[in-house]
Length: 281
Image (cartoon, rainbow, N blue to C red; front, side, top):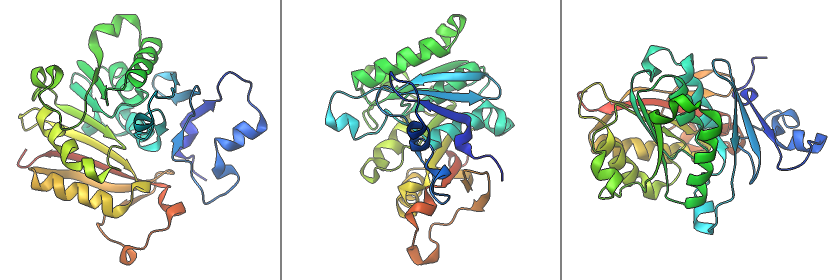
């Protein structure tokens, strides 16, 4: 059997030695062959991302102060973020390369993809998430721990609420980035328009600009299809889009399959992977 995507991470529970129960709780697929854990960590956990290229990267999780911030789930690491990190680390080949690029990550969460982009040689990296102080401070601590001191000038962390384009950061950074990363940012249908607006606002107007998008299929096919409809209406198009499961098997993306019926357990195994660009780019 091929190794799964989740084999590249290891979760250490907070402030205690691991028990057998902890190990099995973090890997339900060992117990239930058809189940896949699609998010990782609990408040205070340490997540170790085992990068072939960069070695182990340790990430702490946090517990947001306010309930509305917890409901954004940015304090977990999701499979879409793991896949994005793998792709920009080199697995995705030249088309996913961020070396020498100006990179903005939307919905950065614990900061994994921004950290990897920095280590992979990006010219500039901004890791952004909803302006929740606890989440942003946790990201600062993760980046400080994982990124060598000589690379500190390359990256920074910013609070950004999707669709809010008149903040100081948004105003000074309009059309500044030629690579935008969005991992598991698509589950809130009410935010699709705001997300697309932020993508287009920050993406360079140069035809070479690209948006790297990875979404967990637990989001649901209809919700993902709705995002693409909005993106197309606002002037974007997909250069590449496909489904891939946690063992690397691929399928073509279809906006509808099996009459709309979806198995909730089965779809947790799948990710939607896409490269978007401005129409005509």
